[in-house]
Image 1 (cartoon, helix red, strand yellow):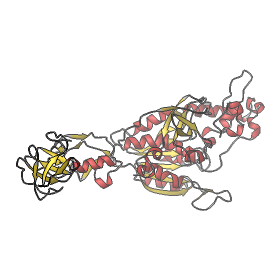
Image 2 (tube, rainbow, N blue to C red):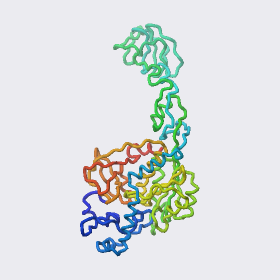
Image 3 (cartoon, one colour):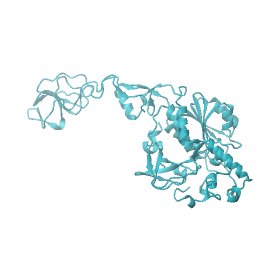
Image 4 (cartoon, helix red, strand yellow):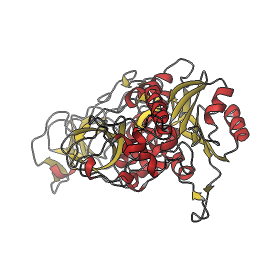
Length: 482
C-alpha cells in the first residue's frame, strides 16, 4: 500500500473494503458508511482467506440501494465500529487491567546473572561504603609530606593487605585501586615524577593535598539508597549492585506467556502450496514477547480445533495467554465462544485501529488474561503493541515509555474512522513512511524502526505523528531479548 498521494490517487485495491466503500460519495457529497462484512471479518480475524463482498457490491448503485443486503451490513459495520474501543482507550484499559492487586506479580529473589531486564521490587541500598577504603585513583607513588621522597623497595598492589604507614619524606610505588598507606598525603602519578641518581623521587609539577586519592565513601555510604524500586535492571545496575555488595536482587518476575497458534492452513516448514501458507506468527511472536519483557513458557499449534483450544486455555498456568486468529465470527473462529464458555470478562472486543481491528482482551481469572490477536501478521503486530505491550509492561512493573513525536517526511494515508499504524524508518528528525503495510504484510515492518500512529483521515507531510519504537531498533538485537 502506498503512503504517497491523495485518496483520489489510490486504487480501490490499495484500501480495505470498508475504506473503499467509505470513499464512494452519495448524492449530497458525504462519504458513505462501510458496507460488506463486519470489520472483524474484513481485517482477517482468522488465518484463512477473509470473506469479501463481490466487486459489484461496492458499486455506487448497489451500495445505495435501500433494499440491498449491503444496506443491512452497513448498519452492522456501523454498530461494530460503535462497540469497538478507540486505540488510545484500548491501551489504557490493557494497562489498567494489570494494576489490580491480584494481577501484581509477587517479587522474587534472583541472582545477578538472572536479573538483567527485570524491575527492582525493592530499593537498592548500599551494603558497604563505596569505596570501602581509601584507594589510589592512579598508578604512581603514595607520598607523605613535601618532596623529594625516599622510595621504599616494595610496592603496594590492588588487593593487598593494609600497608605500613608512611613517614614524612617517604614514598612507595602504588597501583590503581590499591589501599592507601596510612599518613599518605597524595598520590603522585607515574608520569608526573622522576627519580635522581640517588633514587630520590621528585615531582615534575605542583601537587595538591589528597590528589588522586579516592576517599572511603566517596560514592556512597553504607545504607545510602542507590536506586528506587521500579528501576529497570540494566548492565550498569548489575555492576552497581555487585560493587555495593549484592549477590541477589529482589525483582518483579517476567510475566509468563503461553502462545497458542491457530489455523489448519499453516505450514511450519517449506514453501506455501495447495492453499496452505507458512506460519509467520509462530516464529515471530515468542521473541517479540520476550523483547516486551515476557517469559514465553510454550508455543503450541492447535489448528482450528475448538476442543483443543478450550482445553489449552482452561488448563494454562500462564499469566497471559496469546492466541493468533479466530477472533472474528467465521465458522472456525472459536475464541469468542470459548471465552463465553469460560465465563471470561471481555475487556476489549475490537479496537478502532488498522490493521488489527478484531483484536481482543479478556480476563480469564482474577490474575490471568488472554490477548486474542488477528491472524494476519501485521494485524497481529498491531495487537501486540496495542494490548499485549501495556498489559505486560504493567504486570512487570516497568515504566511506560516517554511519548514522543516526529514530523512525517511524506503524507500517510489514513483510515476514514480508525487510527492506523504505519511502519516508518527514522531519518534525522523525520519519520519516513514505508510501503507494504497491509494487514498480511511484514515487508514494511521488517525494515522499520518504529510505527507511526496516524489519526483517522490521514496525516500530511510535515505533520507530527506519535511513534511507537520497536524494542530492537535502538537497543540492538541482543540487548532486547533478555
